[in-house]
Length: 137
Image (cartoon, rainbow, N blue to C red; front, side):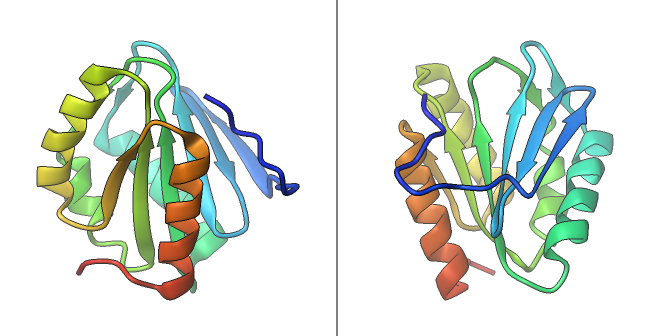
């Protein structure tokens, strides 16, 4: 999985959490979590806090780059749904198990969420949703 692009992308800020890394760009965030980590509600609050610092009054997207296997507490989607300015949620993985998990996660999230095999496709989709401000309420 590549994170590179033909256009130069600048990381605004990078956060090292105890479960992985969050990279913040102009209008989206990319999360890469460690092998075996568990994304709990407490950790989700950290990510929500980061989004409020960088995107308080503007739309943004979130890309989960699933290079490693980790667990996600599905109740966090109830809280993420409440972020009105989060317009796109993309999951990027080449693993079949992640595709199956995505179908379950999508049931909890109930907003604009898509699965991608290539990072570039996810990024294009997120940028389009953020630009138009379209996201299911």
